[in-house]
Image 1 (tube, rainbow, N blue to C red):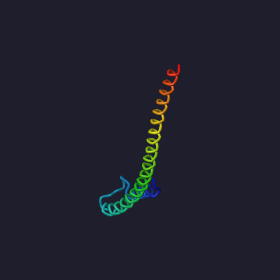
Image 2 (image 1 turned 180 degrees about the vertical axis):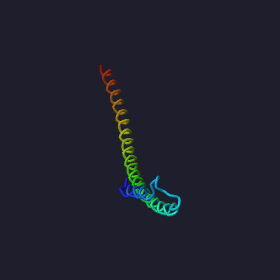
Image 3 (image 1 turned 90 degrees about the vertical axis):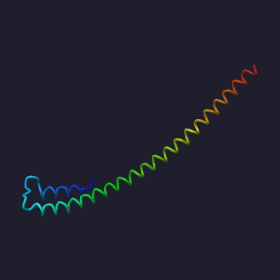
Amino acid sequence: MNPEAYRLLELMKQLAPDRAVSPDDHATVSVYQSRYLAKLMVVLTEEQEKASAKMEELTTRLVTQTDTLIRFTRGLYWLSAALLLLAAIQLFVAFRCR
């Protein structure tokens, strides 16, 4: 995660730890917490955007590799069919010439 997210979390903890919040300055603490929370949400959203872009790139690579694998599999299928045909021809010629 982005180091700034950790920094913002630490600032939020320092500003209003659970034990030290008093009811009379709660409004002030709430304003500052909201400000840091908004910044934290922006940082986390940017991180999510980066992760999403990377996931999209990896998905594209996976689709490309899958398409290549499908082509190779089709090639192997036809090669196997050709080998079976050649084996049948060889058996026919072997028994026919005998």
